[in-house]
Image (cartoon, rainbow, N blue to C red):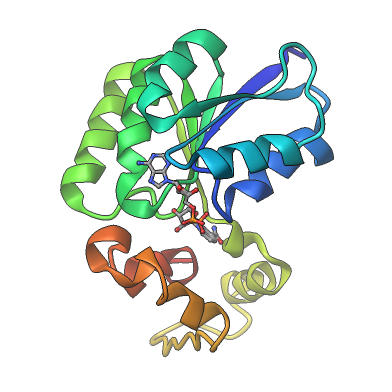
Length: 196
Ligand SMILES: NC(=O)c1ccc[n+]([C@@H]2O[C@H](COP(=O)([O-])OP(=O)(O)OC[C@H]3O[C@@H](n4cnc5c(N)ncnc54)[C@H](O)[C@@H]3O)[C@@H](O)[C@H]2O)c1
């Protein structure tokens, strides 16, 4: 199997899931070649936290050097874990540089940005995978299986409530998620659950 090379842009809370998956859980055939962020401290901390990678190790780049990172490291896949309103700013250039993309949900937050992603995807023939990981948790897949089996008949109405508690919910509203122009608002933010 050909080795797959990855670069991650955005080294905040969420990127650790991807960094660990590549460098610790599934290191065979996968290599993390680069990290990119506006924040040099986060970059350094992340690079230091990963086990040593074969070859030249994990290179770190400031966000202003994203294009240089792609040119020098030639990742097959760029993983986008920056705040939601910035996803398209990395998805589109990654496509144009010949990379596939894995992006955190939501893919983007409004129609103009969505159009720019879909246009670039069509023009380049690259792929973008959106990580709706919550949909694949055991309780949700079981619920879906029950609904799809027809056991409870035809679904005519759905009353959905999601109680974001004082830990998870409050945390969302203490940072950029609370601004609609950065997260698209709560319905967009929680779409990984609501459109299952
Ligand atoms: N699938 C899930 O269950 C799940 C859970 C949490 C977060 N998320 C999503 O993951 C993504 C990241 O969320 P997070 O919690 O890690 O956020 P975070 O704020 O902890 O991290 C974002 C990182 O991006 C960096 N950044 C900001 N602007 C940048 C720019 N212009 N260029 C490069 N880097 C930049 C920040 O310095 C920071 O390190 C978001 O899209 C979020 O909605 C998904």
